[in-house]
Length: 86
Image (cartoon, rainbow, N blue to C red; front, side):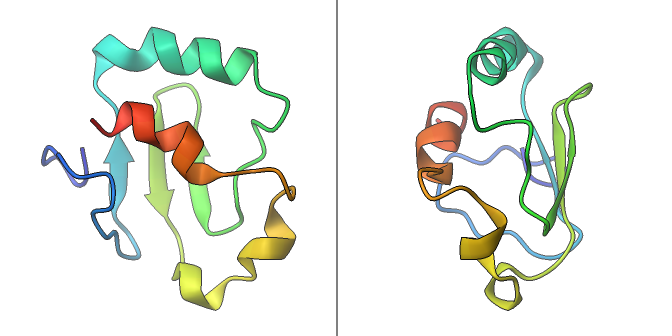
């Protein structure tokens, strides 16, 4: 969900201040993925991530961030988020 509205397309745009949440039914899957990931819990600098309530807030425009330097080279956000955005 983005700002309380269900999102059905994983490529939906988000803006600064948008709140991204995940339905409670998928929280166990997220916990499993995070627990078995070598990349998390290191969020990009432009996101505020709450692992306790599975909420993400967009802090700044991604196009203004140096995305490449804030993440490991093997990180692919689509691989992590696609299963949750369907």
